[in-house]
Image 1: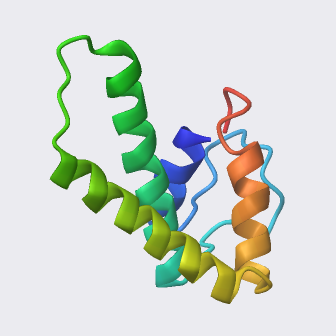
Image 2: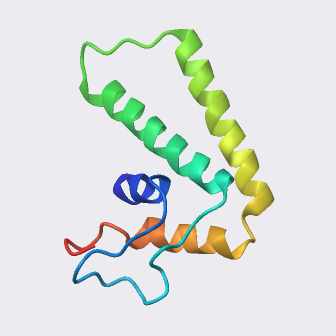
Image 3: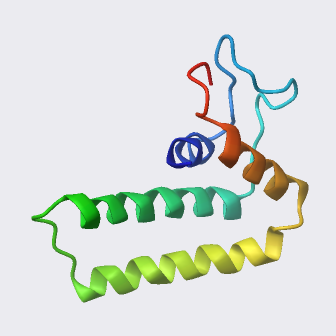
Length: 103
């Protein structure tokens, strides 16, 4: 899912050669709320991996609170747009992008 979120956050989805993405997905653009959600997901996942696996990783209370605020903001944005067609596409891509090597 992190790979998918990175691709979505990077801008319009461009299917790679041999991709299994359905026709019409190419060039898909997302509203800023979804791009922020994807970026926040990637950032939170990176921090979680650091916390789990980097024994020397240290996090200040300020940094943690800031990340939690970003996550809360992203989730509040999600509540506002979750019924939009672009939100449904985001969920589908989040579950499918990066699953196959050809994506």
